[in-house]
Length: 484
Ligand code: NAD
Image (cartoon, rainbow, N blue to C red; front, side):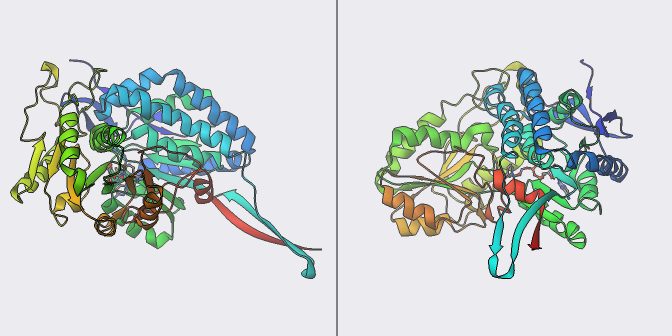
C-alpha cells in the first residue's frame, strides 16, 4: 500500500500540522488515500490573526503590484497544470479530460482575469456647481475575507473567490470542502514563489460544521463568500447574523432546458447531453429538467437517449472516459434514491441506473460510479423535478405552449441557470426575459464572460460574482464631498 498523502493547514505563510485528521477517499477506487486536517476554532483563530496582521501591508500595495503577483501565481499553476489536473481528478472523481480542459485552466484564468480587471476600475464623481461641491466615491478593501467552497469544482471555485478578494487588497482565510482539499494545498506551495506575502492567503482545512462555522462566527471576518448548498447557506446566514456580515451566496439549482420545435437539434442534442452529464452532473449549472415541445418530443427523446448510452463511464484517469466517479458513497446513494423514487411514482427510466448494466475496470469496482440516466413521464410535482439531484440524472417532459412552459420552468424554488433552444429570435428574447433565472443561455450552454454578473435568483443565491460585482463585494465604498 502507498503512503497516505497528509495535508497541513497553511497559516501565515507556513504549513502547520493539525492535532486531528479526517480521511479523504479516492472516489474512483473507494480507498482512503489522503488525510485532511480536522481544524476547528483554534486553527481558524490562528489563520484569522495571520490574515489580520498581513492586511496593512497588502492593502496598501498598488493594484499594479498586486496584479503582477496574481499573474505570477497564474503562471506557476499553469506550469504545473498536468500535476494539478491529475490531483483534481483523483481527489474529486472527475475525468482527467475535464480537469485538464476546464478546472485547472479556469483556475489559472481566474487569477489572470482579476489581475487584469483590478487595473480598470474607475470611481464615480458628480458635480454640484451651485453648491460649490464635487462628490466622489472611493473604494477600499474590507479586511479579512472568509471564503468557503464546495467539492464539485474545487480549485476552480476557490480561486474564483481568492483572486478577486486579494486583487482588491483583502487578505483571506479559505476553507475548501473537506472532500476535495488537495489542489488548494498544492496551490499554497506556490504562493511564496509567486510573491504573495505571508498571511495574505491562509487555508484552513476541515469540515463545515467545525472549521467552516468557526470562520463564519469569527468577529474579525466581516465578509463571507460562500458557494455550496442552499441548506448550508441558511445556516451561515443565521450564524453570521449577530455580526451583520456581508454575505455572497452562490447556491444550488434545478435548471430547465426549454426546447422549442424549431430548435436546431444537431446543436441542441449534444449540448443538452453535456449540460446534463458533464462532470457527472455535478455542476450547479447542469440541466435537470428538459422541457421539449410536443411536436419533436418523441424524436428528441429517441436521439437523446441513444446518445446518452454512448457516454463512457469508467476510470477517470482514462482520457477516453466521459463520466467519472461521483464524489462519495453517500452522494451516490442519494442520487440513486431519486431514480428509485421516480420509478415508484410511475415514471419511465429510459437508460442508465437500474436499466442498463455498468461494467467497470478491475481497479474501479469499489468506486462510486453511475450511468447517465434519463427519466421520462415525471410529474412536475415529483421530487425529481423539484429538488437538486446533483448527479448524472435528467428528466425529459413534453410541453405545448410558450406560456405554459415559462410557468412550469419557473415553478421551482431555485433560479440559477436556464437554457432556451429555438431559431425564433423574438421567442428567444421573450422567454429569456420571463424566466426567473440569474443566467439564461440561448442555443448554447456554459459560455461565460467573467466580466458579467454570475449568480442565482430565489433559493439559488444572494449577490453576484463577476468583474464589477466581485469588486463591489470585496470593497467598501465611501462617498466624499469636497466644497471649495
Ligand atoms: P455544502 O453546502 O455541503 O458545502 C459547501 C462548503 O460549505 C463546504 O466547504 C462545507 O464544508 C462548508 N460547510 C458545510 N456546513 C457548513 C457550516 N455549517 N458552516 C460553514 N461552512 C459549512 O455543498 P457541497 O455539497 O459541497 O456542494 C454542492 C452544492 O454546491 C450544490 O448545491 C451545488 O449546486 C452548489 N454549487 C453552487 C454553485 C454556484 O455557483 N451557484 C457552484 C457549485 C456548486
